[in-house]
Every structure is written in C-alpha cells, then in structure tokens.
Image 1 (tube, rainbow, N blue to C red):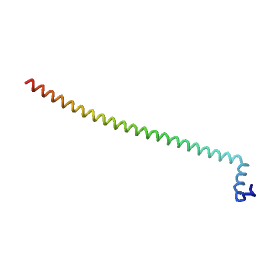
Image 2: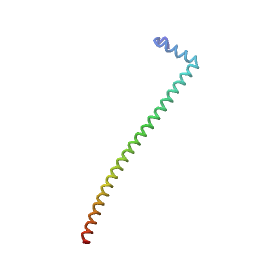
Image 3: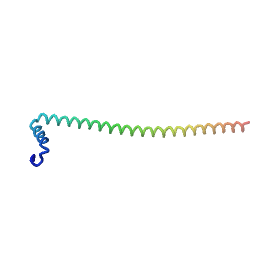
Image 4: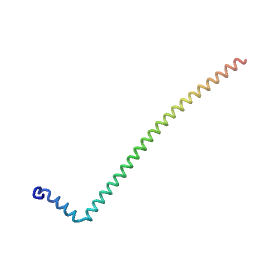
Length: 96
C-alpha cells in the first residue's frame, strides 16, 4: 500500500507505531471519551437551559394574562361601586 501511495508513508508509520504503543492509544481513547463526556454534559446543560427559558417565557405570558384579568376586574369593581353609589343616591332621593 505504501508503494501505491508513497505520500502517506509518514501517516502509515505513525499509525503503526501507535498500534505498537497500546498505552498511548488508550490515552488517546481516554482523551476522546473525556471530550465526548464534556460535550454531552454541555449539550444537556444547553437543553435544560432552553427548557427553562421556554418555561420562563410561558410564565411571563401567564403573568401578563393575569395582570390583564386583574385590570378587567378592577374596572368591573369600579363600575359596580359607581352603580351602587347611583342606586344609593336614587334610593335616598326617593326616600325624601
């Protein structure tokens, strides 16, 4: 194979030497696994953060809806108070 592709001789030699040095190969394997673990943890953190962000947005929307409902209730309460005053004024005027 080296005769067919002489440009790759150095690469083939390096691969052969790595296979002879099992400790070095295992070290590289461990390094790759550590990097994969780190990437997996980061991915999981990113996914959880996205979930938290979506939940925060949903809560903000719910808060806004509740604020709107509170405002509507306050307006209705004000209208009820106004109507009660008018009723009391009419009753007082009829009682005189």
